[in-house]
Amino acid sequence: MNKHNTRDMNYSKTEIEGVYIIEPKVFEDQRGYFFESFKKEEFEHHVGKVDFIQENESKSSKGVLRGLHYQKGDAAQAKLVRVVKGRVLDVAVDMRKDSATFGKYVMVELSDANKRQFFVPRGFAHGFLVLSDEAIFSYKVDNVYAPQQEASVRWNDEELAIAWPVDGMDILTSEKDMKAPKWKNAIYY
Image (cartoon, rainbow, N blue to C red; front, side, top):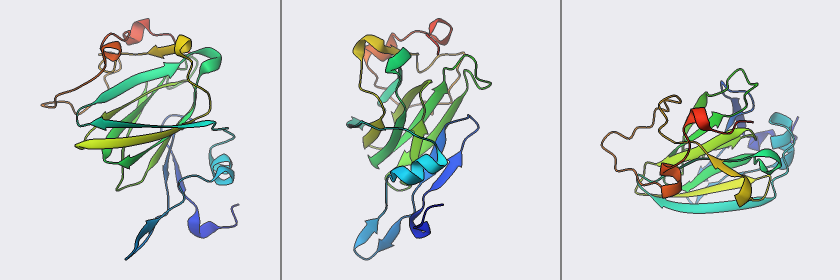
């Protein structure tokens, strides 16, 4: 058990094995706030050993949808994601064909207000939709980007039926994401 219980984060298991929603304890006063966004020992106690080797950040405007991305084989990545500014809906899709939850997804709202983090293990496709005027998105990964091993699944695939709240929203996505394979043609783990 962690010695500093006053600062422990809350690790919530989701309906898909290995995917966690992590909520930090936030300490606020008239000066602002403070929270621990990552503590290796605590993370490994709750989730397991993951060696994050790189941290990335992106900025996107309202209606931007990035995903559903993943890397194949030995290039697979686990991700610990959070929003520094704004609001997004973040999604992880189980790509592990031997999993009881194969093809299922978890969706969580991440924002600068709720300060939640989302752990997406290897074997999942990942994507997010920006709900605020602007969002700054930060994520740690446990493997370097390998363009030759990059793969994706169409974000609006009928078979996956992800409940994106896109009615009346102008969606902006990359050409690559618009042409991503459908679920039935995806490369699975």
